[in-house]
Structures are given as structure tokens and as C-alpha cells.
Amino acid sequence: MCLAVRLLEREDHKPVRRKVGTQLRSRLVGMLVSLVCALGCAAVAPTAAGAASIGIGDGNPAVFSSPLFAPLHMTVARDIVPWDVVTRRADRGVLAAVASWIQAAQATHLRPLVSFGADSGSASNFIPSINEYRRAVAAFLRRFPQVSDYTAWNEPDFSWRRLASMPQLAAGYFNALSNLCHRCTIAAGDVYLPTSGAATIHGAKARLGPWLRAYIGGLRHRPKAWALHDYHEVRDHNSAQLRTLMSMTSGAIWLDETGGVLRRGTWPRQSAARAGNDEKFLISLGRRYRRVTRIYHYQWLGSPPTAGWDSGLLSPQGAPRPAYWVLRNAAP
Image (cartoon, rainbow, N blue to C red; front, side, top):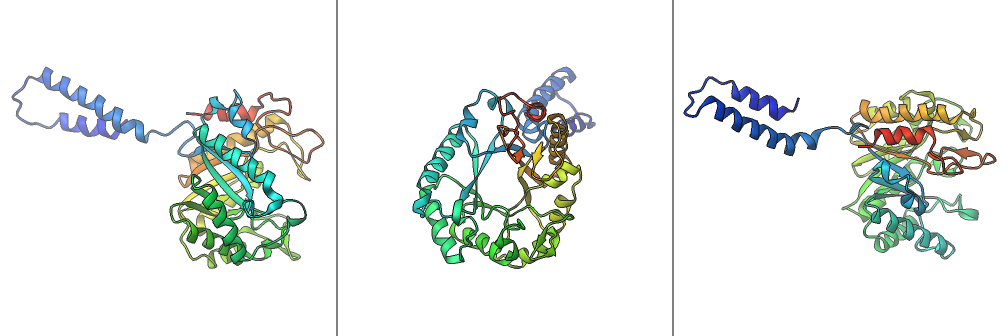
């Protein structure tokens, strides 16, 4: 029951002297209860998906115009953008695509989240210095002042990249971005490492906890939010990654790249129905953990059978999969 209703009902039963008739007073209380609930209770009522805002992680602006997208009532969207997309000549075509995505997201009333990350092609493993990063990101902020949500680097702990062995440099990127944009909400981490498994960095087993501890040691600003890619625990239906992150940090947590996966590298392949069950588990995290305030599903359209990754809400032919209906049923 709405707290305002309980308070008014308690007030209604106080033994006070009445100068108006009982019937008139009851009518006035009833009107006040309705008004207070309309203004207050609706504001705090949870959505079907809990407290978390649901969004899409996909860089194709055509997603937003799909007739299947609007019924999901998503409010946020994410794209991974090369860190030097504004300053690198080779990225002119990518820059145009990023501008189109941002414009389309905001036209659809979605709040865009930009995650900076590695370039493509021969520059994909280049690690910028703090000064190089600062200059390039400052140019992006000037070019797109309408964007206010960021992560400083996509999966800086990904064990196949050289940056994974430099958590304090990754923290330096967060510091630089925080210094450049005080008005922005910058989620720290954007981490991927599981709490167990075969991931290694320089031949040593890599775990989220130790990597995160070193990263936190390099931070010079208190993050407003933290970002996590919890594909592993969504597949396994556990919350080990999330609980590790929660135990070491404070503030909101965004699951900014996640979802039920049909096909991924060496992972055992599974059916769309089983991926839909994984999606149900993912959505439940927003109800179970108050700190989880955003969930971004990756991706929208499924990949052909020959591709190494497929977590699409739709099949390659555009038909809704079970995971799509999970999100549709969870929509407010």
C-alpha cells in the first residue's frame, strides 16, 4: 500500500473533535488520498523490470526505427566508439556513423552512452598515453556536447589486449575524462573479467577482484557509477562477478553490455529458448540488487550461423526470439 495512504488512514483514526460531519470528512480524506497517491505513489512504484532502466547496446541506428523496438519502451542506448574517432583521419567514415547513431538515439528519446575503446584494423592494439587520450577525447566532447554519459574504455581488463596488464593506465583514462567533463556521468570500470575460469594476463590467471583492486588504486575521482559486462554469470545463472564488484565499490552499477548468448567462440552453443531463460535471469538482477540501475542488452539483430557471436534479440531474418519477449514483458 502507498505510504501516503497509510499515513492518511492513521490520521483518519485519530480521536479528534469534529466540527464537520463524519461523511463529509471521509469524502475529503478520500479525495486527498487519491491526489497524494497520484502524485507520489506513481513516482516510486517499480516498473515490471524493477529499478533498472532497460536499453540496447547496438551501434546500428536502424534499430531505433524498427517497429519491434518501440514496444520495448527502452530509455537508454550504448555504442562503442574509437577513442580518437574525431581526430584520426582514417576514422572519418566511422565518425559519420557515430554522429548518425547519436542523432537517431536522441530523436527516439534515448539517453546515449558512449564507451570509448580501441580503434579498428591495424590500430586495434594501440594504447594511447594519457595526453594522447585527453586530446582526442576533448575533441569528441566538443563535437558532441549533447552526450553526457560515458565509460572511459571498453573492457580494459580484456585479457587478449595489452591494456589488461596496465590497470592503472586504464584508471588514468577515467581520471582524464572526469577532469574534462564535470557535468558528465562517467561509469568506471566497464570490466569483463570473470571471478574464475581460464583467462590469463601474461601467463598468470586473471581474476576480476585483483585487477579491480589495482584499477581502484589508480583512481583520482570517486565514480558516480560502475559498469560491468556480466556475460559469464548470465550464462551460468550466478552473480559472482556482480557481487565482487559490489563488495569493492559504491554507487550505481550499469550492466552496460550483457545478454543471453546463443553462440560465442568456444562457448557451448545453445538454443534461442535457453538464451531467453538467461535473459530472464539477467532481468531478475535489476530486481534483486538495488545498485543495478541500468541494463543494456547486446545485440539487436542476430548473426548468420557462420559468425562467431550471436546474442540477437531478433533472428538474422528479423523474427523476435524468446529473449525479445522477455524484454517486452518486462517493459513498463
